[in-house]
Image 1 (cartoon, rainbow, N blue to C red):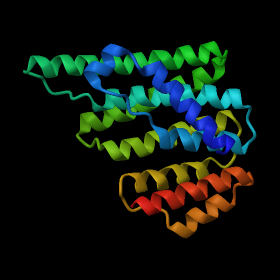
Image 2 (cartoon, rainbow, N blue to C red; image 1 turned 45 degrees about the vertical axis):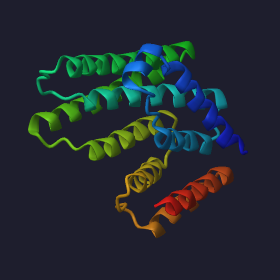
Image 3 (tube, rainbow, N blue to C red; image 1 turned 60 degrees about the vertical axis):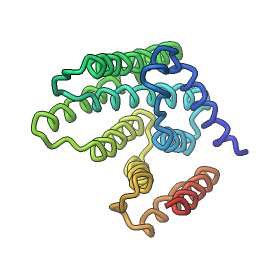
Image 4 (cartoon, rainbow, N blue to C red; image 1 turned 90 degrees about the vertical axis):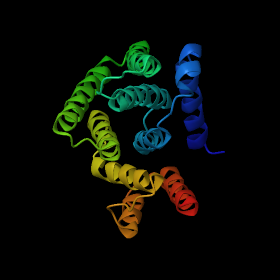
Length: 218
């Protein structure tokens, strides 16, 4: 098991431990961890030789923020006449708030105040775009997921001085399309060029392994 894979599993396990509130598990089920987004973020920070503890902190916190945003985006704006469905919607809103509070708590515990400010501003921009699409009736969950992930990656690339943010956004979008069994906007040859442009050998190797696994499953 490579250190990248081991560190990824540790982050995912910690996320399940943080979000495994008994009442939420009973009512809403097991939370959906954005593992693809998390993996791309982890690889991006690893590629610039960021410290493991910071990778862990930002992996956990940004995944929590992403989870909170997704839960809120999925809440219907239509009036619920069924009491059980109404309660479920209210609980979903509270779950989103809970994940967001854990995002702040995680970064505060690691004294990452500047990063917290950057991500909070980015989350606000994401919410504004989501609300605009809902109001205009143009909201599409996949399009929003793709844009949100790339927006977060861009913000963190800028914060950590990763100059190849377009490369990482392209990688995230390509794999996300494969996950949803959609045709990626970027050709496979262009993807290979993106992977080859990354200087970190272990990161390149992990990306190739991800590509082979996803192509085999599609």
